[in-house]
Length: 259
Image (tube, rainbow, N blue to C red; front, side, top):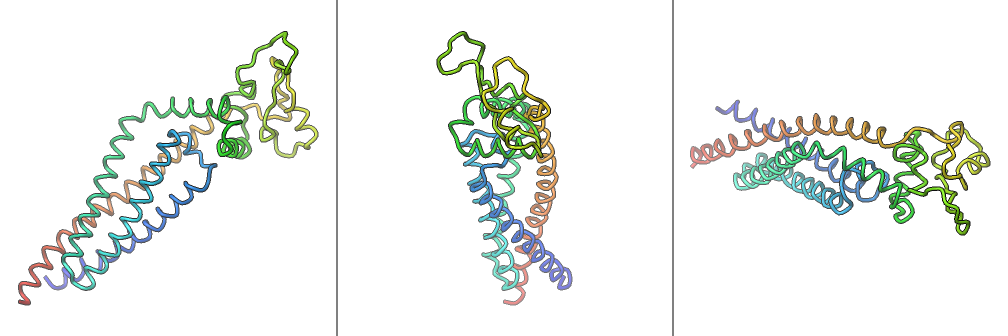
């Protein structure tokens, strides 16, 4: 049993080193989600829910950091109580991850509609009110080479042709981030400022593709990557639970033999 026990100890330490690296990556990810307003994941949830999700990721990463430290210490120093504490904390993380995965699977059908509504609201209402939304959407339009939610005319924000002269209700402006790469600032200004409602924007200067489909495709790709990575991490964590349980039982026997 000595050789097998030693091999399991080294494997357990190796797994906890992986947990340590994952926890540092998770803490870095959560900080990035806190400070960077240009992450498209904002469209997948309401602002409060997004903040809660970020905090949960941060807490889970901190707990995983504690798990890795306790795991390495418990096996290195043969401290069974620390190993049990590490096992319990890791079990909590695994249960939470499985619960989050089940919740996401159940609500997967409503995700597309939620993203569509969030993108449209960003254009229609939030762009002028929220600086973070403005930075996010400008970044998306520039990087994805798109304009508006489904079409550049979305920037009319529901304006219709009116005979009223005051306030120029028949005119609207398009963000400069809709201008194609390489277009001069003069041409961009002319194509985006005081556009007549009902006129088709200049497609040679302004991107004529809406952003919603591109955002949704990017988020689907990201979700697939997250699912694959999450499955691998979950598998490693389950292996860590099994090894931790075996080592805790073996450690108890070893201490009894020594006594």
